[in-house]
Amino acid sequence: MKALVIISSADERAIPGFMWAVNAIKNGWAEDVEVVLFGPIEDAVAKGDERFVPWIERLRELGKLPTACRRIAEEKGFEDILGKHARVEYVGAIIAELIEEGYVPMTF
Image (cartoon, rainbow, N blue to C red; front, side, top):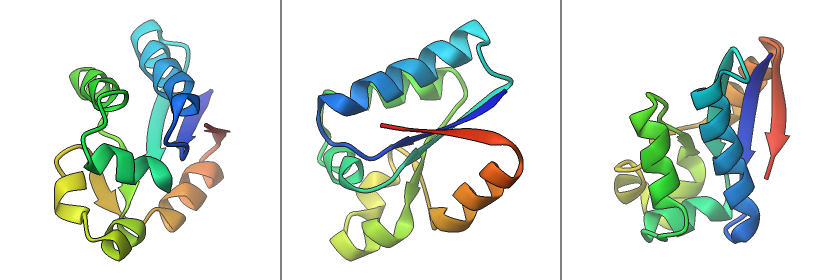
């Protein structure tokens, strides 16, 4: 199983997404795990929200850098800041390709 973890929520609902992704990677629960930040979570991460940045660091330590939506970052003017925490790309096609490749989407 390959998992696509899409985190959008910018409140405590995002924590289980980060937690599951980190633990799935550490414990081999999935063949591969991709994490996409999409929506309000991007603003929180760009502002350095301490509820989320440590989880991104854990992912980075495990060799996984989340991908964040470039379009949202451009609209809000924080693509450079967000780029310190994630790859900033247009994610629509990325999400479609991952689903086509058999990744199971999980949204938080």
